[in-house]
Structure formats: C-alpha cells, structure tokens
Image (tube, rainbow over all chains, first blue to last red; front, top):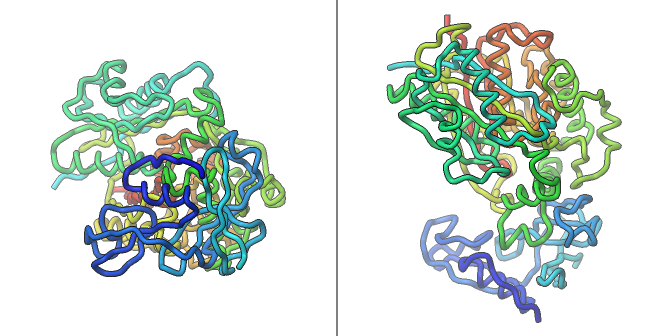
Length: 126
Length: 380
C-alpha cells in the first residue's frame, strides 16, 4: 500500500481512498447530489451536509486527450499517455489516466496503478 | 455620471528579453503608455498591476510604483489568470466612473520565457489544476485544453482543420506587427502536421511562452487621440477547474458578454472589431461561438469567408493574438485591448483596418474559468 498525503484536509478522504484502491466522492445529504471534486458546500443546493461515499468506479468517457508532452520528469517516462474525464454512474466527474484509444461515450471502469509514490486511477474499457 | 476612456497605451516587443525582469519590462510599457497619453507621473492617481510568476512578490503593484517613482492614491495587484488584464481594465473603469480616480495606469509584464526554464514554467502553470484531483495525473494546461477541445469537437463537429485555420490567421496578422514573437509563415497543413502536445491540440494550436509587457491608461478626460469610451463590461466565474465545468457550451463567456452588451446598450451586430483571448485555437473558437460572433461550429466558416480578416466585417486580433504575437501572462491578455485602441486611433500602421465604431474584447483565465468582457466605443 502507498502512503499518500493530501494537499488539503478537504480532499483527505479522496486521497486516502486511492491509497486503498477505493474511489471516494462527496454526496449531499440534503439534496442527494454527487459532487465533482471536493467542496465545503453542495455544488447544487449549497447545503453544508456533504458525506464521503464509495463509488463503484463505473462510468462513461466524457472527454479524452493523449498527452505528448509531459509537464514533469516523473511523467516523461510515461509519455505519451491518455487522460480522460469520466462521468461516473453515481453522478460525478473525475479526471484520471485512461486506456489508450478510448473514445467519448465508451463505458469504462476504474483500475489503479502506482506511479512516483502515488496511487492513480486508470480507466479501462469494461 | 462620468465616463471612462482609454487614454494611452504602450508595450514592449514580445519574445526574448534576456536579462530583464518583470519590473524592467513593466516600466518600459508604462513609460510608453504615459507618453502616449501625454500624462506626467504626478497625474496618475491609480495603479493596477498584474502578477508575475517569475517575481512572486507580496506587493508587486507598490514595488513597481516605488521603482517607477509614482505615488498613487489607489493601488493594488489583481489575479484572475489570463483574465487579469481585462479585469484590471474593468476595475479601472469603475474607479474612474465613480470619481475615485482621474487617471489609472494598468500595467503588467513578465520575463516568463527567459526568467525560468520551460519545464518550470509549464509546471507552475499546471498548478491551475486541482492539486489532489487533477495535477497528480501529470496533467498540464495543454492537457486541460485538449480534454475540453475533445468534448467541444464531439458536441459541435468542429474539426482540427477548423482550429488550424485560426492559428494561420493569427500568424498572418503577427507577421504585420513589428513587436510579434512568432513571424514565420505557416499553413494549415503545417499546423495539423506539428507534433501532438495534448490531442487534439498540436504544437501550433498552442501559444508560445514569451517575455514582454503591456500598459494602458484609463482616464476621465483623455488629452489626445480618439475618445475610446469604455462603454460596457461584465464578468462570470462558474468554476475553477476543468473537471468542474458542467457544460462546455456554457462556460460563462456568454454570461459575461451579455452584461457588457446590456451596460453598453449595444448588440452583437453593432460590433466591428474583435479582440478575443486565444491561448489555444480551441479557446478562440469556443469564445467566438459561445458569445455569438458565429454559430456553433461556424467560426471557421466565417474565417473562410474572410469576415475575420483585416478587410472583413469583423477583424480579429490584428496584432496576432496570444497564438503568434505571444503570451507572457497577464500582459498577453492586455495586448488585445492595446491593439483595439490603436485601431480606433488609426495608429496600427500596415495592420490598420477601417477604424472601428465598437470593439468587443474578451479574456478568460484558468481553463475557461474566469471571463471578462469589455466593449469599447468611439465617441463623437
């Protein structure tokens, strides 16, 4: 297991979840909306009643790119690599690595891999 | 109520200015703007500055004022990424209209190219991503725009060739400006054949990193030139990070524009000059189409018809934009307004178009995160 530190207490549950290969997201107890990224209040209704839940990790590709030029040495070894934003079934979006050649609207599921001291998500075809 | 006018502009060339720091560049542009406005230092009572990634000072605006030897009554920096320049101009307008200030100097500059390594610059810029959800994936600013482009092209049918045509138009414009960073002629085939940075974006779909500075003076009563009134302004901020953008067809650009048009009591059809932010070709196409200067997937068709050329009905970024004039951070997004002022004043040399009546200027910061719209009108 990889030990990772979140950059903020707000995202702690998400980052700790990754280290255990679990995909965590915030859910609003007031209106039921799933949250994209981490928030202090619900993106939809503004209630400060957000609770972390675990996602099944299944969704569809919303957008996709192949990065030819990596921004840091740690990622130059991986280039070219595919990144995607995936719309998860629970109703939130997540940016992560993805299988090469994926197209928008394809159905995918989350897998996990270790890179440079972190666990990252890679979405692959179902 | 008072009006606010752009009273003078100045700039350095964009490109490589080895050995000059952000303040050096800002001072050159500010001197030129004061000279252009025929104002003395003691007549400047407001100063707004941007930020410089190569000079992360706590008080860049007052540091600049001390070195530049001015003592304003109102002064601070402002930060909304690429929208900073337009946001400073909007605030300068408010300061003048309210009577708080008579002459506001708006200035930004940065040695973004020569003041750091390219890798360091790319890493600094990537931090506009979410620190826990986006950046750890090895995402970069081009990757965010590549993702956004894939979605926009999927929903609208815009093609890579459509995007490439805007890179060519910006290059052809930059070739006619003596201060441009990139001036080698390019073709659509060159753009499409250039290496992939973040698919679908190729190298020539991306702006360069430059050194340079821009400055404008906003005044209650300009001393010289055409009276370029700041007729309207608007903003919208719907998200910070690309992942949180809920609709690629509603990024906030049109919402900001509607406020500006309402304030100016004008419509899209009244506009006869455009200064539109163009960090990537996709940025330019999305802004033109969301704001309403072209239908969805129709911007490239207007370009092919010649509408956006110097002799067309809606000349666009005649200085060459961020894509070819260059991008040094905040000042890059001010160049569009500086060029508009010159076009109003018949001072654009070989680039001169039929002097506009109403210009529309738009800038965005982050990943289409912060939008600022400005409408400039010739008075009298």
